Image 1 (cartoon, rainbow, N blue to C red):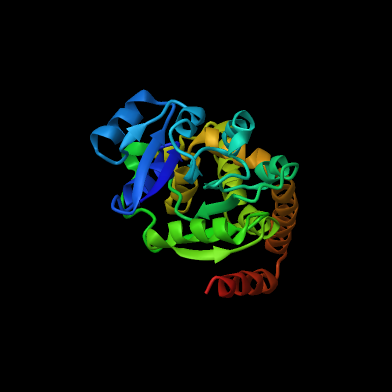
Image 2: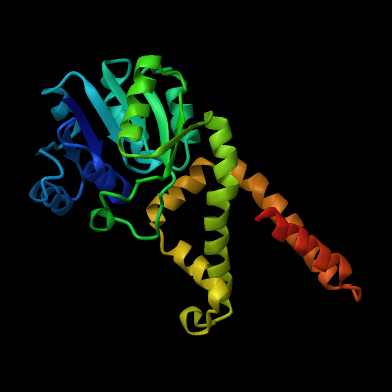
Length: 274
């Protein structure tokens, strides 16, 4: 039976703990919220709680450690527990952005850290919204980074044991792709709702169907998304420039008397999403 420590039992961390086969994994947990950790114990999702990583290391010398916390917290925890680098433990995270973590770890080139990103987000957060089947059939992006094959395979098998579809990307590929497909849409949502609020419009009262998705995105964890924006701000900035350019092109076409060019552009954009 493999020991696995899940640090952070929120939506993703809680879902991971609930998804693990307890005949194959001995699951332990750390969470800053005492009520969350007690609930996980009562639900028999974890077999034991720990107050910190050092306490866990005093009992075990191999297994898997999953950092299910925002990027800045991952860095803080590793910085306080550098002894876990290049050990028998296979380490992974679940962050939506990797740049700040990778830049921190570049100085150590750890052979036991594999980046992971389950594509299974929700505007609902917390242990209470985690589910055993939340990751089922979802894609998980993994980046080998400096890891040895042994640790890479351990993390890959961890995700496949939860019936996920594993896809490998480099850290740079990951940041470039998810800047456009995830980080930019969230940033636009916050900016849009701020714009509407500044017009003193009741968003809930006058929102049409198209706005509901933007509202949903702004209900995501503010701590998590501010961390992600900071981590991947360089890629997001480039995508914002391209986005603004495309918006103004469409607006310019909308100002012309002849609407054919605008119509054609919209039709081409629609074809791009099937």
